[in-house]
Each structure stands twice: as structure tokens, then as C-alpha cells.
Length: 375
Ligand SMILES: NC(=O)c1ccc[n+]([C@@H]2O[C@H](COP(=O)([O-])OP(=O)(O)OC[C@H]3O[C@@H](n4cnc5c(N)ncnc54)[C@H](OP(=O)(O)O)[C@@H]3O)[C@@H](O)[C@H]2O)c1
Image 1 (cartoon, helix red, strand yellow):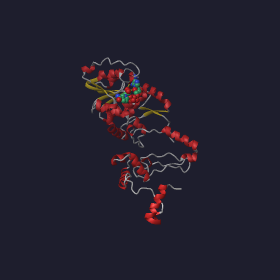
Image 2: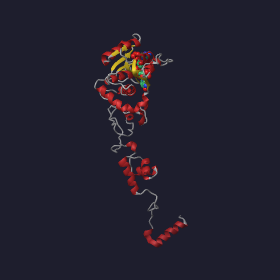
Image 3: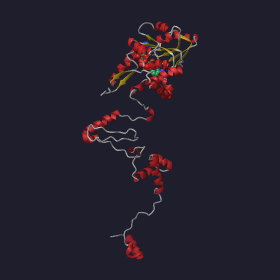
Image 4: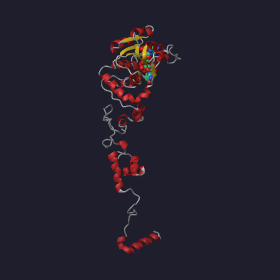
């Protein structure tokens, strides 16, 4: 049974074309005016191959909808950007283990997602899921602008970027060069000189040609500063009044005081700074956690025309690359020593903080969340 309309269509065709018109014909139109032209398809494919652009960017350049570009790329069987190595354009291969525990090679210069996988085939789904969860816990996806690429070497470990080559080194450099503007021949006192900032500040002042006095608490630290670092004089604030010791170490006065401690240390400095002396006020650790009282002799700032300048390292981040280059060079040439005190296990963080405040550290205090294996 066919409709009268269909019967008429076939009858008309037989009359016009004879038996040769009696074959089925496709209903597909010969031309489709809204389809993407072959020329446009070529331009889309070229932009993908030459510039590794995604559908949104290609659409933006050619004035097309991203969905259209996506459809063309799928039709042309072109891999997603996340599945190719952006440099070579080659598809990334999943990494596979020939057997559990075997080494895998992951080429970190490839800019693409490396799909996780393979292991569960050997270990079973349950273990595979556990491994996947562990990987997710260890992995963080962050904005590239929020992280800094570091280049540790055989002689400079990654910890250095937590102190000398990180914020502590930058703080010291800003204090010495930008705020105090230490000159050759200056007499400079650095307090908390065995600490993270102080240790770099004292050695930078040495490198600038100054005569450097350091102060710290306890025999071990003062011996280290005098014998290992080679400071010109070292004061121990646990062995009597700091003002008296400073008078002995700097009988002709100070040109610069780098203050990490505040309190009695700042007061002693105000009595010793020469006319026109400078104080780079970096920190006042002796007053943290309690109400601070000002130095009783602050009037010396007027009489001796002193410049006391506080600073925050965060205002000087743009100097970080240049400072890192100089400090790294000093470290490699053995002119900058940067020991650190490490606590293993995140649960040690409160103890590490208390130790820092009580002076239990030499150099930077570092908490390592997981103890690093030495094997
Ligand atoms: N302005 C900034 O942008 C900036 C940036 C970073 C740090 N800071 C400041 O710089 C200072 C040093 O920081 P850091 O990270 O390098 O710490 P740190 O010097 O590594 O550790 C603090 C040291 O201060 C000493 N100290 C603590 N209480 C003291 C007291 N009552 N009298 C004398 N010394 C005392 C202790 O050393 P001893 O055993 O030798 O006494 C302790 O080891 C801090 O005040 C910090 O707040 C400022």
C-alpha cells in the first residue's frame, strides 16, 4: 500500500524517464548552504596544528562559534589539546607498567595532562582506587601565577628556597641594601644573627665590606657565628646586659643596626648609633605575644638625627629574582652559609614554633610534613 501522492510521483517519473527512472534516490540535498566550507575547515585545522589553539580561541579568531570549531575538529579526528604534547603535537601515551614496581618514565617537559592509569590492571581495582586516592591527596592543582619555579642543584637543596633563596634572604637583602644602605667600612650590628633572616643579613653586610657585629643567645650559636661565619664580634644576650657588651664591641659607635629583636636590643642600639646612623627595623621578636613598650631613649633619634625605618618584605617582591641570583652565587662560592633546623612530621609544627620563639634554631626552622627517606 502506498499513498496516492507517492503512486503519482512514480507514475510521473516513469512517464518522463522510462524504466531507468524507477531506482531509489537519496533524499540528501546536493548542496548545504549553511555547512562549514572546506576552506574554513582547512583554516581551522591549520590554526590547531600551527598554534595549538582550542575551539574557543580558534572561534574567536575566525568569528565562529566554539561548538562549530569543536564539531569540525571531532569530524577531522584531531586529538584534544589535553591529550597531546603541545610542543610536538604528538598524542600523549598513557604510562604503563610492565609489572608492579617497575620504573616508569614520565617526561615532565610535555605540557599536557598525563592520564593516570595502568597500575590497577596489575594490582586489582581495590588497590588501584587506593593508589588513585593517595595521588589525589598528594597532588594540588594551583594557578601557575601563585607558584614559583625553582632549580635545586646537587649542592643547593630545595630547602634553600624556604630560607636564603626565599623570603628570609629577600628580607635580609632589603634590610641591608634598600633600608640601611650598608656601605664598605660601616660598623653594622645584626641582632638574632643566628636566625634565618639575621644570618643572611650578617653575611650580606660582610660581603658589602662592613665590620659586622652579631648577637645571639647561647654558646653554640655565638661560637658558630664567630668561628664558622667569621663575624668581627659576637654578643650573647644570655650572658649579661646587651648594652654593656655592645659598648665593648663598638666603642666608636654604630653606623647601622639591623633589628630583629626590638626591646632591650633596640634600646642598646639607640645609645650606640652615631650621628646620622640608620636602623633597619625588620622585626621585634622579643615583644611578640606581650604588650610592647617603646625604648626609653627614643629621643636619641632626634639628638643624633637617626633614621629608623621599618619595612615589610612583601613590598619588595619585585627584587626577588635579582636577590636570588646574588645569594645563590654567594652560596655556591662558599661565602654564604645557610644552615637550617628541621622538624619531621606536621604534628611537630607547634613544637617548631615554640622552639623558634625560645631560640632553639640555627638558621631557618623548617617543618617537613613527611620525613624524607635518605635511601
Ligand atoms: N619585616 C619583614 O618583612 C620580616 C620578614 C620576615 C621576618 N621578619 C622578622 O625578622 C625577625 C627574624 O625572623 P626569622 O624568621 O629570621 O626568625 P629567627 O631569627 O630564625 O628566629 C628568631 C630568633 O630570635 C631570637 N629571639 C627570640 N626571642 C628573643 C629575645 N627575647 N631576645 C633576643 N633574641 C630573641 C632567637 O634567637 P637567639 O637564640 O639567638 O636568641 C630566635 O632564634 C623576626 O622578628 C620576624 O618577625 C620580618
